[in-house]
Amino acid sequence: MRSVILQIDLSIDGFIGASDGDTSWITSDDSMNQDASDLLNTADTIILGRVAYQMFSAYWPFADITAPTIHSKIAAQVNHADKLVFSRTLESVEWGTWNNARVVNGNVAEEIARIKAVPGKNLLLYAGAGIISTFIELDLIDEYRLRVHPVILGGGLPIFERVEDRRKLKLVQTKSYANGAALLDYVRAEK
Image (cartoon, rainbow, N blue to C red; front, side, top):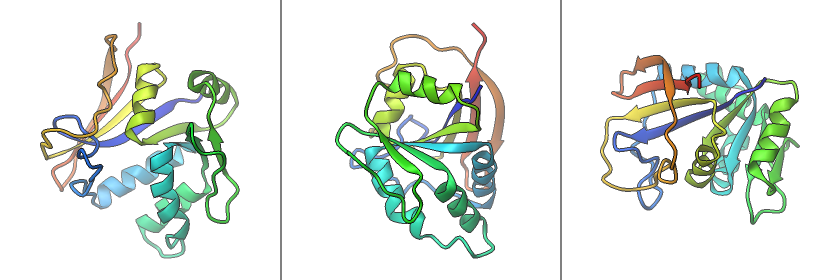
C-alpha cells in the first residue's frame, strides 16, 4: 500500500515558519537537494494546502527543467507529479501547462484512504501548517522526514499543537548536512 510521507523543514523548537510565515532561515545544500530528489523518485503525488499550493504554483511550473542541475531535476519531478490541494476555499487549481493538480475539499481521511488503496507510488505531504496539522491530528502520516535547522525561532507556525494522543515512532535514519541541518526520519512504530 502507498504511504503518506511528510517532509518538512523545522526549527529546533518545532516551528515550520515564523509567525509571519517567514522561512528565510531554511537553507539547503546539494546533499539536501539530492535527498529531496531521491524522495520524489519514490512518489507520484504531492499533497499541499491552499497557501503552499499558491506559493509552489507561482514558482515550480516556471523553473528551468532543462539545465543539468539538481534544482532542475527537482523542478521536473515536482511539475510532473500529481498534486492534491486540500482547500475549503479554492474551487479549481492549475499547474502551468500540466493538467495534474486538483482540489480536494471533502473528508480528508476518506480521500487519503481512497487514494492509498489505488496502486501507485507514495504521497508526499509538503506544506502548509494547517494541512500538516490536520494530517497529524487524523493520524494519516506513515513517515515523518523532519529536517531540523540550527535555529530557534521562539514562536511561529507549529504543526504538532493539535496532537492529543501519544504516537510511537521508530527512528529509521539520521543524517547531518554541511549547513548544520539534520534529517530525522521516523516511521510508525508497530502497535
